[in-house]
Image (cartoon, rainbow, N blue to C red):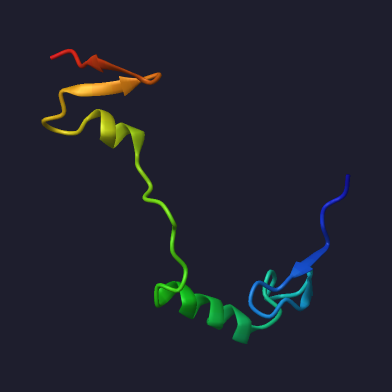
Length: 75
């Protein structure tokens, strides 16, 4: 199976070849439009990201869930 040689620009949906300098965008304009959306909060993650290590080591937390069952954490 070969590598995809092109895809659509995320901003304007124009076909962009992998060899083009602004790949995966078709132009610097589309790249800057996308950057502006990120900077202004136009793109958001729909659910909070939780780091499992931070959950395990939270201060004052006495119980930890494992496999749907709650168990007491060792002190």
